[in-house]
Length: 258
Image 1 (cartoon, rainbow, N blue to C red):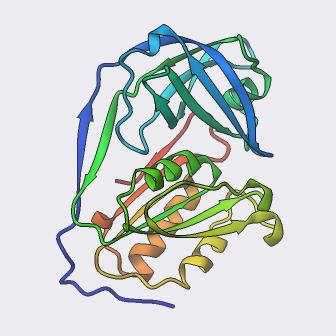
Image 2 (spheres, rainbow, N blue to C red):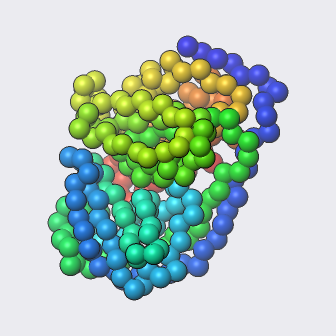
Image 3 (cartoon, rainbow, N blue to C red):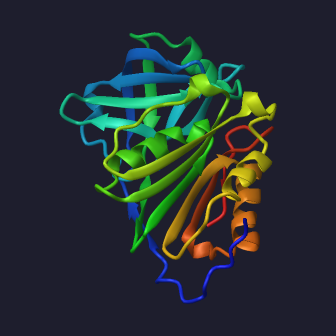
């Protein structure tokens, strides 16, 4: 289904940047659990969490981990949850490419140490949004979950989430009016870099005035989905926030499209 949008759309939301002081923190690994077969949850604690802030759902921090040579490298992750009262920072690690951060998450044990930095900034999306369309793979689940949990009661939202299989689905607490569409790659026989299954799913949805699309997946997938939304569906770029959370074959690489 294709829809050309009317040019008399409501005024596009604006993105407002908030700067934070960059703080490095040395923390302790308090808990480690598997949420799903391909998602590890790690809880960090420690006195140095005091003053930590993450006001926006898709904020990111850097976690410092050893690579295969023993050198320290940094990787970006979304804070899944921060409990200031109890001093607990939750990070979820998608087990997809076996890079240094994934290996660290697989190997780390409660009692081990962890070092993080940031967030350096947050980007608020401000404006009159009729409906949110959240699209992502498993690496985007922490940000999608936070967006759903932070939503006002009755806010219209649609999520299209691609995961390895049915066992990787998660549940969310939200007051939003939400529809969640899961795309199971194992059933379709496709890889994490497949974009067509997401376009096929998107093609079944009507897009209307006031729809804002938040998109995060592998860089090539994100690029093709953004192009489809703009070229085939007539969506203005100002109504899209698109990020490649990872890039196949490239370490510590993201892709920005704003």
